Image (cartoon, rainbow, N blue to C red; front, top):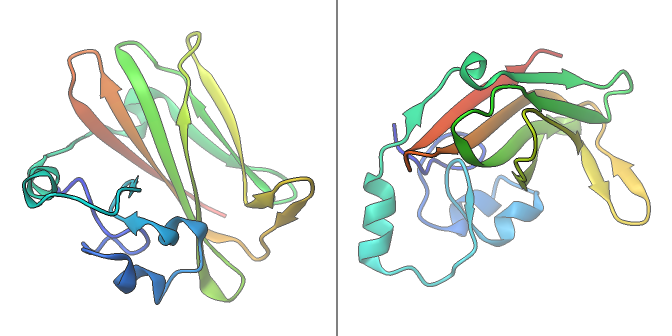
Length: 161
């Protein structure tokens, strides 16, 4: 499995031109790569090649106690992770489609404090006021897990709605 796959449809892409044609999310203002976004515009060929060759091991959602739920009003997704033993860092990427099948997403890093995590992720944008996406479907989360042994893992889970 390649670490970096195209953001919204799982295909590898070298530049934002391929992605921005099909994507309206704010993530595509940078170079989008699979699981996560790279903000650097200048990448040396050797660094790029090393990233492409890196293998990411996979874990099952149960291995980290990953649970997803959709709020009753369909405006937020709650992510819970209940098995944090041996995990040093977590990053996530939430992907979904909104009205008219427009690809949308949210990314973030999670501070590990305590023995479990509960994170609410808004399906839309918020600054002073929240604007929620409508007709949300195909919700999927990808979690990048780094363990104390230095190995990187990927966990994927979809939410039935």
